Image (cartoon, rainbow, N blue to C red):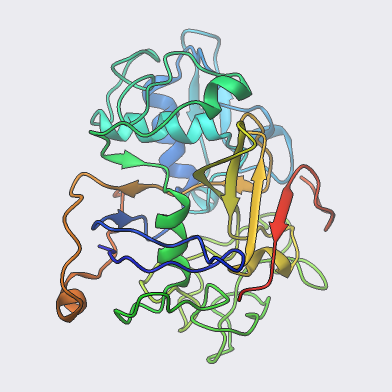
Length: 324
């Protein structure tokens, strides 16, 4: 669980990170195997396009294969891909996955009992404007993390001090190295992002989740890969329709790892750099006294489981400023 009132991050006002309730956040990004299970449960017809053909056809995709025809689609992924983060995910895809978890992981068509209601009311929303208008319901359980929830898990020192944040997601104010896991930098950590070349390269590009298991490559709260593998959606909205992403991708350079780097993109956009993790907020308890934080701060491992190659910004709009 994570809790606290501190803020930190983007711009002189340090607007990110304030959370006044206890919540849980995924230790890992949602994996290809977990998303394949989701597709097999609700996408035999796939009314709202939860499967993107680039997942299979693009060499940078997560390599989920769809077979059959509409009404009887089935999905599969090889064992060497199943524990790597899913990618080619839109914001609506992530919200529908969260609804599926909220509803108890049912099997059936994509309707109000499976993907279209739950933590978010989508009811067929697919356009940028419609998806950007979707908000977290008061009785939500599984969700896409808010920017504050995501940011606190990634950057806060986990020391009970309001406003105490690292510049990078590896318990450091210095850029982590870009090297194959588990990484050798015991001071600043390591992450999978594009430096002078690919960190792991073809055919996977993305590591298995949790592969950077040498301290301090995880966050102070024990989350993995918030600073690498794939950009991750959050709930933030800018200019009425752009949705927030944070973290870093295997194909982007180090600028996006910084706490001060804040990015927003078209919510219907899905490509090889974008994945997500989920959070659980059904126990939004009051923030404990500071002296009690040490016993309540922990991370829940969710879900038992069994592109562009260029360093260009592409569709990502980045809004950055140096931390005050």
